[in-house]
Every structure is written in C-alpha cells, then in structure tokens.
Length: 146
Image (cartoon, rainbow, N blue to C red; front, side, top):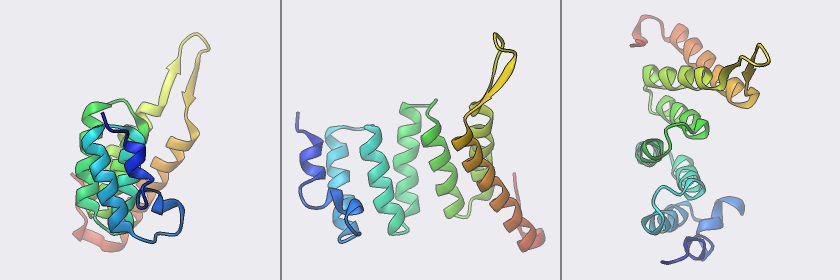
C-alpha cells in the first residue's frame, strides 16, 4: 500500500499550509492520495479545503458526503457539510445539517443530571443557522426552507 503522506507532501499537498501556491495541484494530490486511503479523515478535510478555496463546493460536497456515510457520528463532517451546502445556496439542507449538529452535541448526562454541550460545534452551528436565517430575511419571500 502506498503511503498517502508521500503524495501529500510531494510538492502540492502541503500547499494549503504555505500560501496557496497551487490549489489545483494540491486538490489533485489529495484526490490521488484518497484513492489509496479512501475515507481517511484528515486527507479528505485537506482535499475539501483545497476545493473550497477554489469555490468547487459540489466536488467538496461529494467528498464530504462519502466521508459522512463512512463516519455518520462525526460532528466535524456534519458541520463542514452544513457550511458547504450553504455555499451552494442550499439553505434548507444547510439548516438541516446545522440543527442536527446542535442536536448531536447536546446530550444529557443522567448521572450528573445536566446537559453536556460541545461549545465549538454548538457555536459554529448556531452561527451558521443565524447567518442562514438573516439571509432569508434579507431575501424576503424568495427564501424557502423545506
């Protein structure tokens, strides 16, 4: 099996850390690496980041949806999906994922008789929800949330 890190750091993959020199090359390097390690979380995130910086949201969504099928309880994947759907002007789907993220990060600990909330995911999802709802108000009746 080929070590995907060799592809990542072969001149393109680490582009995101060093000034966005060749985003298309970085995306291609990550795409190749993911062929050898499909579903690898950090590779997928870096791939999607390279795509995001090029406004290739649909391709990023496809990669994240694949990762979501592999890891359906991962809140990182869920909140990234919400943001990507919002970038694709799919407010209803973005809201669905953002609300699901809030729901999943709020869990009751019956032993402590309290609600446990992961503040980073909660705040990120809540901020996205507010952004979507404010945009809906600005657009007026043209904004439809299913």
